[in-house]
Image (cartoon, rainbow, N blue to C red; front, side, top):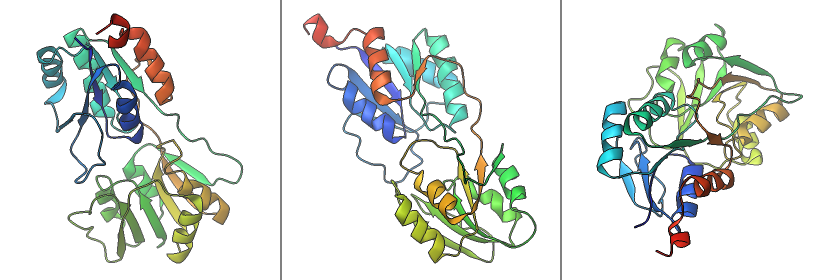
Length: 253
């Protein structure tokens, strides 16, 4: 019988990890279900929440999961906390895939803040042309600052639209290259970017483009996450899994 692994996903790396592990393990990829048209994953997928830590712990037991992998977005703090707690409750080992955050380099003009609400305040009272690259769940907070023009990019439509007089909406899915982001920022006359510190290469283009154009960036810091064994890359985590769980191929299954 193949060892069973549950991956809490929603990131490109989670999909890549699932594909890499599927050759030797029985892999289930769990998605929160917030994206209306998720990318095809290539492995069995479970969509929707578990009902908190208790629900996830029950699922781990009911489905005989032998390893839980937290490969959620760096800002999915509640899911990560529930995962760590559920793993303890169910007696199942847990590891995390955590891509490193971006670090400011020479030429960057970052204002680092702790919350989306702080980001709203960081824009200041004078009207600005703001690129919001936060995801649709986060943008409602900017209704508190209706004096700005907002360019809002998301994978799925922002519904309802913001109650502000001047906003433009773009639907797009990364990766986004620096040259494309440079053109986008110039075309819309953007003078400040609001971003999460997601890390990775797929969405770094806007940060590099802002630096090249001399634009301010309001960077929302990452939340605190549970301290569990982790790796920074798909390959590193796959190696960890191979040491934690004996692959089926080695048992002659």
